[in-house]
Image (tube, rainbow, N blue to C red; front, side, top):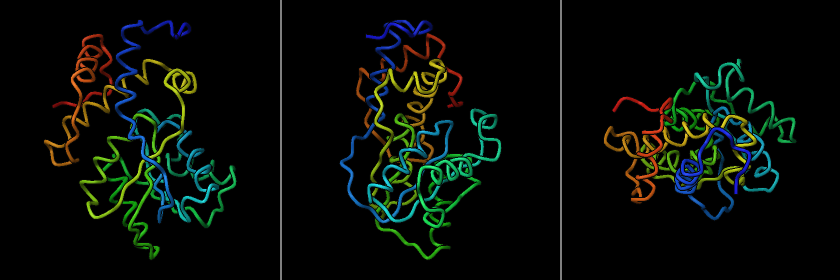
Length: 222
């Protein structure tokens, strides 16, 4: 039971935990041709990518991402560049990492990474997408839409919800992001950006409740 999250009520925490659990794909990992580390505010993506590389799950890794309003201050030179540097510090050889520094959304993360890989002569049949824990489902749905012939697995840092909140240090930001990612899972298929994913009724109810409670800073116009 949480007892240190002063700004979030118990009901809000339970709703957010439902959404958190839904966002994770829980794929069984196995070796793939390449991994793509999706840029964000969460440097844990780079750390987990490095761990999975050292475990021998893939021989090459793309870090992708420019900047967003939530990352510009933390990663002024761009998400992908900072992620690459952190992975190298953690033991990934520089020549195993490809860089895609321009993507501004998840669709671009995938399509531009595909171009970077092709330019390097790499044409994978399977890929591991490494992301924030609550971005797994959206990244999977997006990749299935824009790269449909690819076998896709998803992975993220294996942290529980409370531990993740502590690691980020901003619980409102995390809840805003959970809500914003779920909105994109719901809305993006209608716009042609992703494949459709079934959303359980209790998850959808939790989503609507958190919106009513004001966790809305990452919502898009729909």
